[in-house]
Image 1: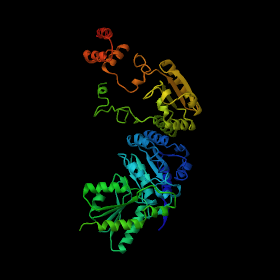
Image 2: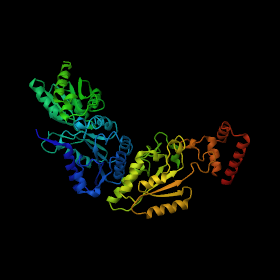
Image 3: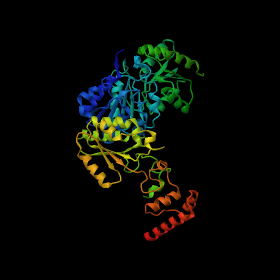
Image 4: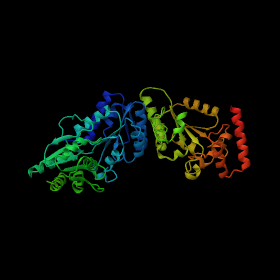
Length: 311
Length: 223
C-alpha cells in the first residue's frame, strides 16, 4: 500500500486554494514547515501571517480576519491548536460561528517520539464539545485534499485533524467528500467497524483478517465526527454489533459519539478501540501496538463484540 | 431604548456580555483579552485589501493582566500596524480590588513602549485631550498607538467614585436615586421603594428628605 502524509496533502491543497481564491489567508505559529503551510507562505507572503507560538492571539486574529471577509486557515500542531487556545476558539470562533478553518497536524500517538505533551489524544473531544463546529478526521491524503477544499467553500468553523508521518493511502484519487456523510468501504453482515483517521486503514486490514476466520465486517469511514452521520450509525445497527476505532482517548471521541447515537436509535453491543491513558515517547508503530491501537486490537474487539451478539 | 429593560433577560438580544446578534455588534466577547487580537485581524485584512481604515480597541486596565494582550501587543508592532489605536481605561480598579493590589501593572506606559507602541497618556475625562490624542494616533506611522486614558471609575457619583465595590455591581434603588440626583437626572420607580432602601443603607430621615426635595424640584423643573 502506498503512503503519504496528510499534512503534505493539506499543504498542497492550501496552495491550490490560494491560487483559486484571493480571500484565503493563512495564520501560522512558528511551525509552518512542519505543517506544510510554508508552501502557501512562499507563494503568497502578503496573505500569510506567522504569529509565533502565541496561539491565543492566533485564534482571535483569525476570527478578526474572518469578520472582514477573509477565509483564514489556522495551521499548527493539534495540541497547540485546540487545548491551548480553547477559550479563544470557543468565544471568538464557535460562539461567533466565524468562518475559520483550524487545520492541525501532528495529532494523536503518531506524533511519536515527541512524547505525551505533544501527543494530542483529547482534541476530538474538545472540538466536538463546541456546538456548530465541523470536526473532520480524514482517513488519508486524498481525502484530506477533498476535505480542505470543501472546508473553504462551506461557511463556518472547521477543525481538521491530520497526522505527522506518512500513512496508508486508501483512496486512489481525491474523494468526493461530503460533510457529515460516512463512507462504507466494505460490506459485511456480522458487525460494523466504524473508524476515523489512520484507524480506517487498520480497520480494513482487520476486516481482511476477520474474513479469513469467517467473520464478515462492514467498514465505515466516519471522517466527519460533527455533524455525525446518524443514518450511517442506524444502518450499522442492522449488523447487530459495532466496533469503533480511533487514535484518541476513549472518552469523548468517536467511540463516545457512536455509542451516544446508537443508544438513541437502538441498542447493540459496542466495543471501542481507543487509548485509555497517556502514552510515552516511541516510534508510531511501537506506540500503536503498546497502547492498543493496532489492527489486531480491532480483530480482538470484533471477536468480543460478535460473541456478545444476541441471536 | 425600550430594549434596555430586557438587558440580561431571557429572549433578549442584550446579553450579559456582548454577543453577535445584537445590532451593531460584530464580535462576541466576555472573556478578557481577546479584543486586541481581533482588532489586529481586522487591521491585517484591511492591509491585504489595501484599505486604509483605522481600527480602535478599548481595553480595561485589569484586562492587561491577560497574557493574550501582550501576545497581541507584540504582533501589532511586529506587523507595524499603525492603523491600530488601543485605549486603556486606566481607572485602577478591576473585579475584586484595586489593580495595584491584584496585580501591579505599573510602569504600564513603559511596558507598552517596550513592546514597540507609541504611548500617549491623557486625562480620560477630557474630551479635548482625548481628541488631540486620537489625532496624534492617526498621524503616527510605522507603529501602533496606545492611549492610556486616566479615569476615575464612577466619576460624578460620590459613593461610587474610585470604589471597587461598584466594578460589576448594580446600585440598589436608594443608591440609584442618589446617583441620579447627583448627576442631575430624575429617578424612576416608586418613591417609597428607594426611600425605604435608603433607610436600610443608614441614611438619616433628614438626608432622605433633602434628597427627596431635590428630586421633587427636579421633577417640577423638568415638567
